[in-house]
Image (cartoon, rainbow, N blue to C red; front, side, top):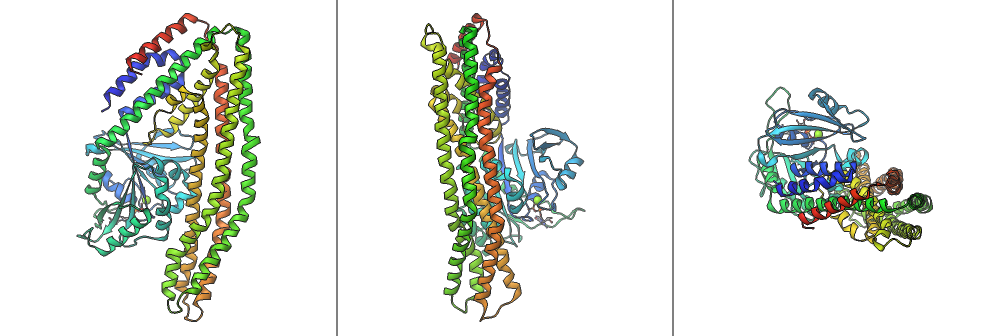
Length: 595
Ligand SMILES: Nc1nc2c(ncn2[C@@H]2O[C@H](COP(=O)(O)OP(=O)(O)O)[C@@H](O)[C@H]2O)c(=O)[nH]1
Ligand SMILES: [Mg+2]
């Protein structure tokens, strides 16, 4: 499909070999595989029992995924559809990213009872629909389990998916959790991703455009998402085999997905992204080769002193965690509980006032209105301030980190300048920049392997970076703000989920019975109980999120430091002639690739 890109990689191959750098070789192989098998991600979301697993089983054509797994323990499973695969293959992927081939029986057992270090399960199954070749479908547990136990769905899968299929059961309709989930789903998604609404178990012959129930679900979803999603209805078929579970078919849905993933527009997008990555790869190889040449020109004493400067650079970078990261998080963490407590009061005041303003006779309407609107709306609004506080503090920290690192880069460059004999010409003196570029290329490679495995393509970073050292600072800033952004969104999810807990408390009222005289005070009491419980549950969750983000920031700093020190381990190549030959090779490949 992308033959011209594979040709480019072939042209690049001798240069990659010449670098002798295993990381670049891995990257090239990874890229080759990705280009030969471009994949699309589809993530199924929706409340437990809305039929996600059943619908995927319907496409597989067998009862592979369990349809009654208890939602909080179930594993995430990933089904990769291959056009006319000989026989299905099963894998387990552990939390340290090791993939292991397993038997079908083990797959089924692990689906229902995952072991603790299991990250997810993967099955490669055959499809006879060619357009679905390499489609990767993720089955997920219910919303509650996602927020509590499967952070990777929020952080990695949703942001990288091409399609989200949101399933709702016709009979059950939109529930509190759907409300919370849909409320922030759009923020997590990439701009070009599509949301598809699937209404499962519809009455036979129900019309998508006229059936009132379907219209209701549809308008609810479009209100919450602010978009008109594509809607598909699946008829409620009866189970005919001994398992007692139906295998719903949904040709319309899969045809739609198949067509969408093979549009010309999407093909172009992928092509450009892959092309950008290949350009990056060339640039990284060239950096390594230029650096080797310059190192070969150094005297032993000069290279010893440069190594020392590199070590000092790495040490300074690590110090930033003690000097900047830890104090900032300590401050946020000490202020947060009080701020969330203030929120509790404001939420109560607002809702109680609304309850007292209501007409005495509107008790049932008011309970429903409190649940469907007042609680989620008020929590979101009032917590908005807390989230903004976190966001502002962290954005400030990111800026400080960026400045700090940029200063260290400049200091390192100055040191190298002093070390080098004044006989060296300017080109050779740029060796400090070469070190930084190579270090950055390595760090970016790691990110590439982590995130480009998904469909979220954004090529060209390393390539742009090689032109100016300033970009290095920008890249650091971007990396930190990406983590911050993800965490702030995750907190949004935590807060929204908490709102579901209050709703549950208020809903108890419906079963307890309440009279016309005292309903306002009873409802008020329930709201207060619910909001209090929400606060008690939410504070530790947000503090844990903060802890995680601090760890991520520190490990990013350590990654940068380590990349700088890794350069030290390599002995400079003594053979200047070979280095020169490699530079010529790089020049000629650059011409061939038109860079
Ligand atoms: N009869 C019938 N049952 C269905 C259909 N879709 C789902 N179910 C049943 O609904 C229950 C929950 O389905 P499941 O796929 O586990 O939902 P999930 O929790 O969203 O993955 C199971 O008992 C299924 O057999 C359908 O189209 N027809
Ligand atoms: Mg399921």
